[in-house]
Length: 320
Image 1 (tube, rainbow, N blue to C red):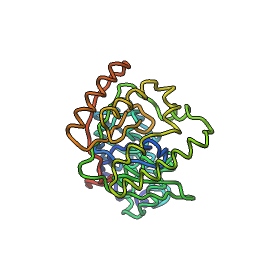
Image 2 (cartoon, rainbow, N blue to C red):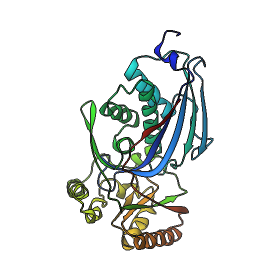
Image 3 (cartoon, rainbow, N blue to C red):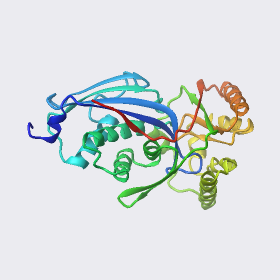
Image 4 (cartoon, one colour):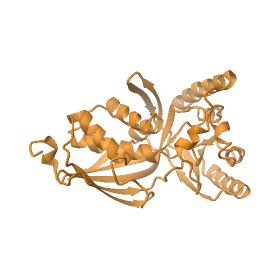
């Protein structure tokens, strides 16, 4: 082990900052996402002689909940990237990891993808930044199972992504300066795998065509400044109607935001967060009130958070 390249980094630390993300954005199931200005900050210290031990400290979201082993998404991303860049790791390598997490777990805000992307960035930094962005995104998508949240967390802004053979094609563009996301974040947790299990294996052709049109027009609108087309993009026929069977409060919450003047409103990822886009302070106030009123009607405790879409993706913020 003494001659392994990683041994010379024993005790080295890398700190990364990773944003939250909202995927699907209505009709863009598994292919659209936007980064949000809620961030996790994670520090990883190399411990080559630790007999493979992983020491994890978490402050904020996920405290006393996250796995302290190699199934932790940060560790999976970190070690997968090191292997891709430099080959197999020594048997005794371990990690001391400290997380300051602001992204809620199991709420459709990309907490899993943020951990994975954070690990990938830390691993690439330790390996000397040897892997290009396309390969980093491919590693993240393989771990996550789909690219939408990972692409938004890694690249920032609005991102269109799709599997492309063994890799992922991703195209990003900046969010406008005045656009805001009003989030209703329920206390209710909805694990992604359970919400995916609610989806059918086949859908009516008319629903598929409606979503194709909404994505085509909605993405073109976003890319050209037609933010009024968010109203069409955020109307979905492929997943939200089926997830409403598991999450019956969903239709009422989305309708409340739209009725209050949101540019568009939808389920964030697999939920349970509801996202509404708005471009004015008056609009924010109306939607906050509408969310709280609707939540009281459907008995859905939660909180409102207003955030900017974040045009900067994940980044390395410290090395020691």
